[in-house]
Length: 238
Image 1 (spheres, rainbow, N blue to C red):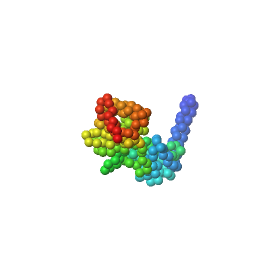
Image 2 (image 1 turned 90 degrees about the horizontal axis):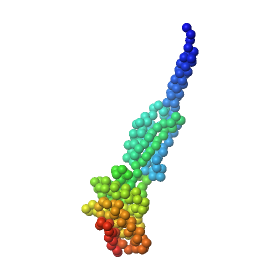
Image 3 (image 1 turned 45 degrees about the vertical axis):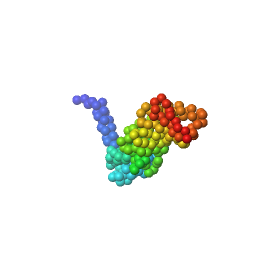
Image 4 (image 1 turned 120 degrees about the vertical axis):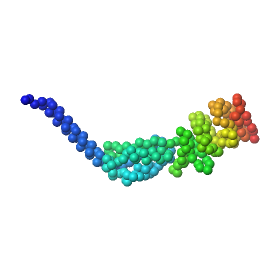
């Protein structure tokens, strides 16, 4: 009976490979966590601090640093980070070198509502709590209830997506009968928007008025600019 040396060599190599892989996997899983690296998608707006994230990670794990990698409950850690009301999304992972990585995307506010309870409205039109660590520079909204959040979100997003309006409008006040007033930056008049309808038409008319009044150097002479009426801008001087 002739031995198939090629088959024997292949089987031997396969066995060695499996043993080496098992040894490496065991050694890797037993390796201790050396440090935690936290990254924010937007570092310029730290609504959530690294210290807060650290506390969420160790809530039931104890000190993560020095723990064997195999004992890390990564899914549970990730869910705890995601449960923070200012976190939009998070990814928790561990590297071969023993670093626990945390990638965080924060919710981004587009407006701040003042009232009995103050809160932000985020880019998805949802309530977002204020942060003790960072205050966002967004338009201030007064006079709305929770039922008005979809309407104010529509208005603020329109303003935010227009370069001129985004720099120009610093506040929105709701009055009776769903009438909205816009507050411009460094000017002493109010912009009467009326209901949040025909925004493109109304605000295009306002920009045309502003350009002409700026050219004529008459911006400081007005008390209010009324955009409620079709095809015209009604102004009242002081």
